[in-house]
Image (cartoon, rainbow, N blue to C red; front, top):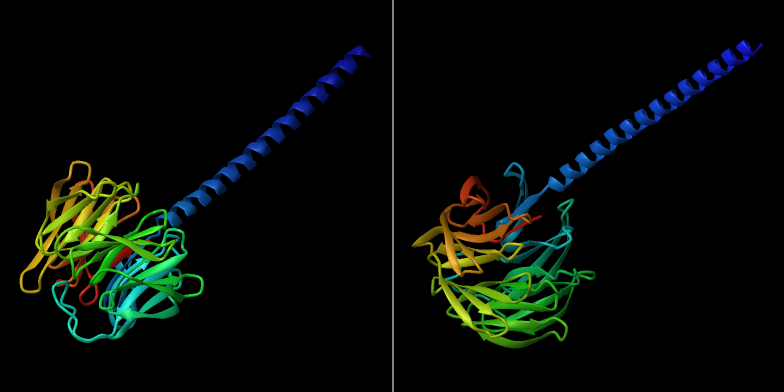
Length: 360
């Protein structure tokens, strides 16, 4: 009897172990399946994160380019000269400035004879569909979104003011007076201050976006074309087209240092960590330049001069600072530079006279 009970208990214990083993195996299999699914999901997420495009503003439209392949994927046709294009900080909007076609876009050394109202266009960055067009001032130059996505600002080069557009309503809520010939600019990361380069004089206008007024002008040098501001908000830079230099301004003291760059500098861009500033040296149609000056802001030194196409104009870096993108106005191309070794890794044809450039 005892023997029978022992055998029965042993059999029951074995069945229980087997059952536990099967349950454990099922859990492991389920976990493995979940892990595989999660890995696939994460991989898909990474692939989506890698999806990136950059856009060039051109005479007659905007070209959309895949940043992975450096190949054009779409052309958005626009009547008139698209001077500047900008992606919003949240990546959802494309802003562009358009001037009616009145003649050759000859660069920053040419004047503009007629005063005609221009447009700010807003596109959905996912669908590339036009959302709104807003009438602004005469010969709109650059468009920049505030980091908080409250406003888009447009400089009106011939009206000497900047239009402030409410991004929710797409209405101009204020025109703020600037210096003579406002052109390229940037907004501080706190969305409170815009620094606007005034091409027609030697100053940068400081615009308070809370009071909606110009609070002062900083004298920087001859013919400033565009500006940039470091992420910490302490250092301002401006390209001095007529001096072939970059002005570096300490905003506390307003002391100006000048760094010699190439001929006829146009746009400047500071990478996201504030380490380097890149200057596109355009020159003129008669004497085009074809270089990018890479400046280490801490030492105030040009650490590399990179040969690109003729008429280097617009410039931007990828968010991770691995690549630099430059429009070449007179070659109708874009150069892609690898930031770590300062080598051009791709050159692609785009539309006519590409100038502004932005990346998502």
